[in-house]
Image 1 (cartoon, rainbow, N blue to C red):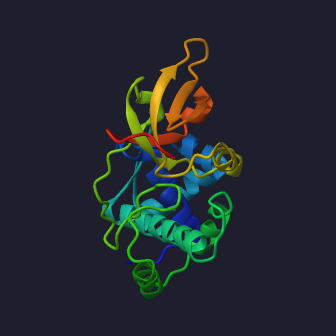
Image 2: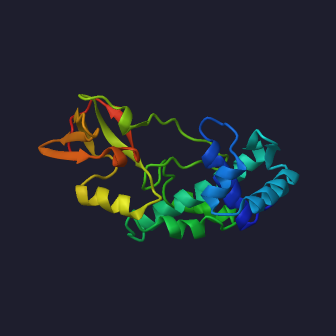
Length: 226
């Protein structure tokens, strides 16, 4: 497999994130917005990636990854998430401090180093934000998360994943006492603004509609405790 440049890796990763999990093609306009790049530059890069057989581009229908392009994207994601685990577990960074650092480390090209990092960390299944870590062949373990917005009053679960793009969001969750694996019951949804009322043992928490959009839950029948 040919090695991709840093810019090519960023494009392939962005296409993957925009098109998964439904597998639908994404648009050059969407890529331009995510990558903060001019549309003309996106079009030129898509042509280059197509020539390398990493993407399929059908005019007016969008851009999708070939199997080879998908494996490169998943390799970058794997490195990013393994480095995040290392930064939190071994170097004691906060989960709100690691995204930008991992963005730099994800472009290291040594498969041997990444395989040894994976083994050193004892093959973690998820990163500190709950995102699943692909294996060496791009495989994922089975996951059953759903958005907090889809939970109904009376249902219980634990916090399984959060968006990792905004440090302020992660800092707010920490201030509220919410962390991965926190168990809770959704006691009510307020009709006026759709605020979610969570009960974790004796602790009551209110989660705004905006915040709920960034939280994913693994349903369970366990008792709600922090």
